[in-house]
Image 1: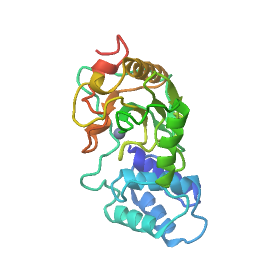
Image 2 (image 1 turned 120 degrees about the vertical axis):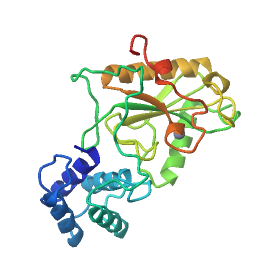
Image 3 (image 1 turned 180 degrees about the vertical axis):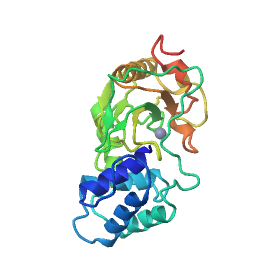
Image 4 (image 1 turned 60 degrees about the vertical axis):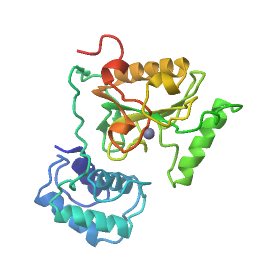
Length: 267
Ligand SMILES: [Zn+2]
């Protein structure tokens, strides 16, 4: 069962194409549904298209970026390539299969869960980010002003909202971004099923260091609080830094989930 395939099946079904049961397995019926969708030219728009676009990105057949609400020639190309590959992720794609880090017990309750997007991805990972702003960018600005500035950068990318689920400021205030039930835009290949919070540094992140090198104690305490809240609300199995998924410094340090999980959570 693969979440990305399930998202494609659910999307095609919502658009009125029969793609077999939403079982996350690629088979003849799924393929037939995708081919029918590719052959059609009307009625292909809305949330279902966004969901399918994201799944095609996650499978590695389109580059990450804002997802489209209307079917485009780019989506035709991506889905056709996926059909030709029998639904297999493209080599090099980061497949939505969150690994459990050694020593981290994870959350095993099935009662507490946050699901994201119309495909209902289980939120199971928390990703730490930096706003990658300079040592002085935050000075003289209110937190709300900073939030709006970051949001405007993301809107300029063509995104529908800020990509993060929240921003954390030097004074420890947290301003929430996207709802937890919405898929964010913060870590290519791992947006579905994750939460992304970004911290405003008070020293420019120019190298891999320790968290304390770049962020205030108030910021670090606040992110621990958000992580604890997330662990309490859903089955968080991994706490990671953006730099584990991309060739970036973000957030400027190596994130060991045992160091960020709430007390008593590490096995
Ligand atoms: Zn990042």
